[in-house]
Image (cartoon, rainbow, N blue to C red; front, side, top):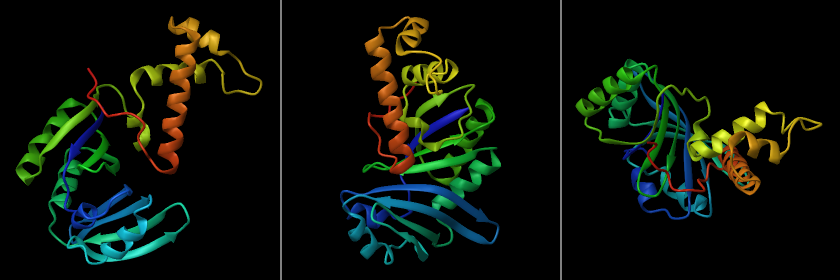
Length: 222
């Protein structure tokens, strides 16, 4: 079961409230019985300099290391102060069988993507997270799906369908095993619709791989 939910967080909270034009993606979380929450965060955008100048004084940060100082992004390792609500939330997720994928800052809070074995596991997490004091708002719930890419939440179901048909039909093979017309025929849509959905899907995946910038508003699946 693949789930995405919107929530608030103590991590980098003050820094992000005072920094514009920045994208932050937390790509890894870890913690232990005697270890505060540790994160790997990729920071991109015009506000990178402001973020860097402020983050060392953020109340959530206990220790910070700059792992990569590139032209396009900065990569940080951060150990949070002990006892944050985020640590309790992560521990609740692990106890419920959840597998963390990633979190993305969206200006008005975070979008986190996770996998769960089944609906009961996610419901158990919701109960535990409520007891921990964090409120979450599910935005994508896909029962029977278990994704391995955190950036996959930028794809709509129609885009996924076209992309899957393209892969299975050999559209990306050399030489190609199918055409856009073949994909359109199998999905009973126009060739123009197939082309647009495929290009949007590829664009979303490319942005997810490099900066994780979302192209479209995130909506709850029916």
